Structure formats: C-alpha cells, structure tokens
Image (tube, rainbow, N blue to C red; front, side, top):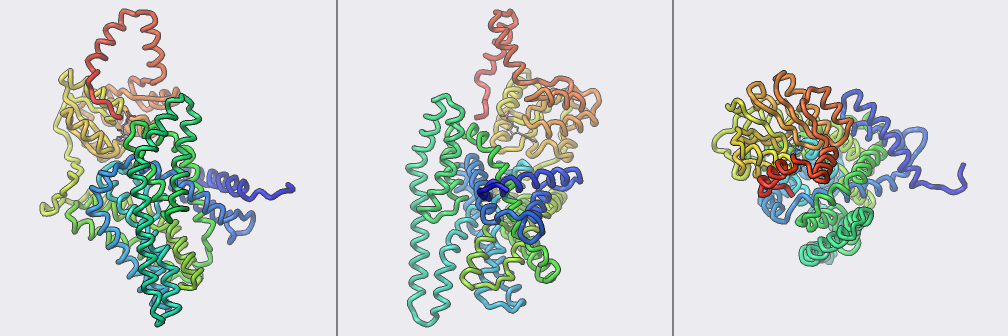
Length: 572
Ligand code: AMP
C-alpha cells in the first residue's frame, strides 16, 4: 500500500479503465458505449462490492466534462442564434418544466409525500442533462441545424431556471419552516431579484467586456505561435470563465462556459479552439456517465419497482409529450418536434444537485434520490432508442399543410431526378471548393450536408441539397447513386466516410468514388470498401510543395485552376 492516499488519481484511473473496458464490450455487443460507462460507474460505486471510488470527486470531474462540452457548443452558437430560438425555447422550456413538475408532484402525492416534496421532486424530473443532450445531437449531426439549436436554446433556458431554483429552494425552505410569521415572502422575492441581477450582470459583462477581451486574448496567443499556449488559453478561458461565473455570479458552470464559448465563437479562431477542447472534453464526458452510475443504488429497482416505473414514464413519456405539443403549437413540423422531445426525454446532473439540496433542507424524503437516480440511468440508457423511434415517426408521416414550418424547411427526402450528376458529401472547406470547380464546369450537382451554414453555401452555389447525415440509408437512397457520374466524399470523419462509400459501392458497382483521408489507415480502409481515389491531405501538401520547388510545368496549369477558385466561398 502506498503511504499517502490519492483518491483523485484512483477515481480517474478506475473510472477511465473500467469505462474503457465496458465501453469496448458494449460496442462489441452493438449497444451504445455509454451503457458500458454507466455500468462501470455502478461497479466502482459504493453500493457494489470491491473497489469504491470517491463519488464526490467523480461528480466534480464530471463537471469539467460539462464545462468543456458547453464551451464547445457555445463556440458554434452566436448571440443571433440564441435570440432567434428564444421565441420557442423560452415558453417551451418553462411550459415543459411546469408540466413535468406537476406530474412529479402527482407521483409524490401518490407516494404520500408532503406537497413541498412534490414540488422539488417534480422540478428534479423536469430538467435534462447537458451531456446527454449535446452528445445525442452531435452523434446525429443535428447540433448545427435549426432544430438542434432549438434544443440547445431550450437547454440554456432550463439551465437558467435551475440557477434560480437552486437559490430559491433554501429561501423556500425557510419560508415554509417559519410559515405565518410574515417576513419570508419578501425575502424570497429579494433573493430571486438578487439572483436575476447577478445573472444579468454576468451576461452583460460577457457580452460587453468578454466579447472584446477573450477573442483578443486568443488571437494574441495564436500569434505567439505556440500550440501549447493556445491550448492552454482554451482551457484557461473555458474553465476560468465557468468557475468565475459560478463563484462571483452564482451562475452554473455550464452556463458560464456556454457564454465563454459564444463570445469566442464570433472570432475566426473558434474552429481551432473547438478542436483543442475535444480530447479532454470527451474523456471527462465519459467520467460524467461513470459518476452517474456510481450514485445508483440498484436495490431501488427491487424495493420500489412501481415508483421507479412511474418516474421513468414521467421523464420519457410525459416530458416528451409535453415538449412535442408545445413545439407543434408553435407551428414547427413533426421532425423538429420529435427531435426536441427526444433530446429532452432524460435527466441528469441538475436533477441530482436539486434533489441533493432538497434532501439537505429536509424538503423531500431520502427515497426520492434513488428514484431520481434510477430515472436518470434508465432514461439515459434508452435515450438513443427514444431518439431513433421518434425520428422515424417524424420522418414517416406526411406534414399537414397547416403546419408548414416557419423557420425550417422540411427535410425533403424526395429522390433527386437528376442523372449523370456529381454528388458532393460535405460542403465545408473541401466540399465547397469541389463544388465551385464543378459549377465552373457546369456539372449537375447534388450536395449532402449536415450543418445549416454548409447547406446555405451549397444552395447559393446552385446545388440540389439534402440536409442531414450522409451516412443515413434514407438519404443515400435519395441520391440516385445508380444514375450518378461521380461521388466526392469530402467529410473528414473516417468512420462515416466508410459507411457512405460502402453503401454507394453497393448501389452502383461502376460509380467513380473519390474520398478524403487524414491517415494511411483510412486510405486502406476506404480502398477496401470500394473508393477509387483516396486523397490524403498531407501527401497532397507535400506534392504541391515539391512541384513548386521544382518549378514543375504542371504547377502553372494547377495554379491556374487555383486562381479560378480564388473567389470560391471557403468555409470559416
Ligand atoms: P471541412 O472539414 O471544412 O471540409 O467540413 C466538412 C463538412 O462536412 C462540414 O460542413 C460538416 O458539416 C459536413 N459533414 C461532416 N460529416 C457529415 C455527414 N456525416 N453528413 C453530412 N455532412 C457532414
């Protein structure tokens, strides 16, 4: 045994190792790796025999994941986006919280708990987990679409409501304890106003000062040429602002980090900053699931099965139905409504905090914690299935004309009528250049792109555009691959590129397939799946440099092409 205790390292090491092993097994069994992460948590938790990690430390580590995740989301979000989805997100989130709280209170009443317990318990069931929501949207490439933004805006509003709730609960507890003495209601109002003032002050400071200082700081650091310092700047800003927001303004870590990302997002360094944050973010997001698993007492499934089932039903069915109806009432189409419902049909970190405070203040019985945790774990585990189910429902049905969406065109999967066309998958830095070249040739072009910005670029270049993840069979089926001339797979993700190439090859054995790669392993992988030409970025850079150095005659012809593309729109 070592002489000194190292609980932090033990928790990180055990959490990551077990999550890795069980995640791998889950992947082999074709279930979501996050199921493995949650089970890893249960195994190192205090309710199962063997090694026990420190749950408090694990929860804190998970917060780092939440901070980096929300920082990354903020980077892709502008103030304009936030305001544009506010019209639906504010009433939507508040409406859904009210409905979920009422349902939770109903269950609490049925369990014989006091009315105040119902309020706290219901509130805990009403708020979705940031980590689960963002990962679900990212996995499906819908984070940067309008419906993805609605879901994120909704989450931000929920977060704000919870910040207020966290302040209000202690005041409420005092008010109830000293009922009839008259003072507390004004106190309640006062603490509410004080919190609102602090949150507004934080937002104002970020929008006025942060918006100038943070991009300046990042630019300055980038110009030092030190990658290490730039990386450090990303983490320092994300964690520093999040912590400062929490410490000085009582704002949640997540919200603080979101604003830090948002003010940096308007700068052209946001892409690089986002890339730097990814590795650490993913590792800590895994620890989030481990920390959730650790808190679960599995006995609750045996001791109170009915209450657990009712809790899960509220989270998955009740909340989804409420969100669906609200989104539809605002005139959005089915697929938007289903996406928003599915992404919110789970609970997580905020629920644990709320219920913990409620128990600390003696407002709710202790059993409520086990119900909330069981509800969280099950709703997180089944979330991917809920997503698939609801999205399928959304795609299957016709849209009644009176529900023509006001902000987002229906994802139209009517197959293209073009033949002899070129298909460009991804319309970012690479795809948009390919597109510009094809346009010059006068080729017929179909584009598949996941982000709104890319879709807009492709449309303005005169392409037929399909919005969504190009690896989806439904989209592949709409591209008329059998009649196409050439397929350009310009997305950087090797895994999805492989899925696309494989399906395309199956649909048309003679199609000319060109793909982009970042490693020789990817080149081999894509070759096996049937791509004709795989372009490895690094090799091309070297060729081009050598050509120039040798004064190669081809250089002249090539740079002529480049000149022609000079004014092509290049993604930021
Ligand atoms: P870049 O790396 O700048 O060439 O950008 C890649 C582009 O591909 C981005 O605009 C992404 O939104 C888009 N993209 C990445 N993966 C997919 C996918 N699976 N389906 C559709 N578009 C994608």
